[in-house]
Length: 155
Image (tube, rainbow, N blue to C red; front, side, top):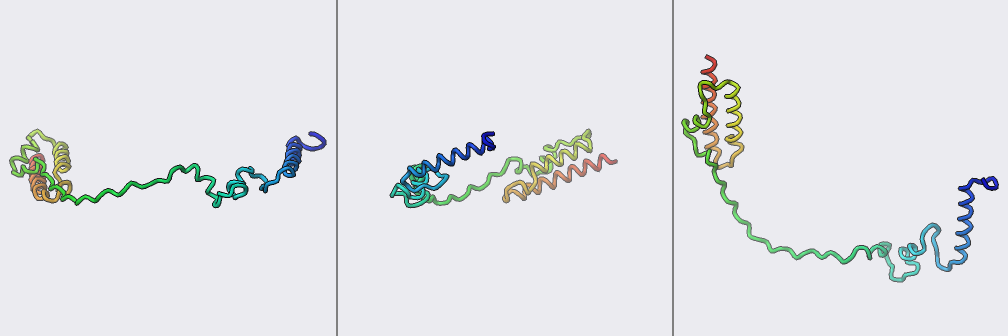
């Protein structure tokens, strides 16, 4: 401690006296605590072209962004009709039975797995609207075949 002051307090006092001396030497308007160049450009102190507070930052913005001309509107095309998957064309009982491949050795667990996988690929809610009738027919036949196989296992 110097003369019953802390080191921090003595530094503050020295800075204060230096600032007071520099204020006497300056002729331009100065805001205490702000850099002179900042105050001059933002507040319009020394530069007459600065009219708005954001003028000091316009140099950093670069060239103005010019939007590209709008593209001409194309005539909306009619959506192409959906193509029916090949498996939906097979709606005969024998074709669905061949697809399921149920044998006398098929277990109950395997039959449930076949029902789930068949429904995943053929459920009417998962196909386009024009093909829902074929999908419904296939699901009905598959469920009938699997239910018959389950009844035969129960005997």
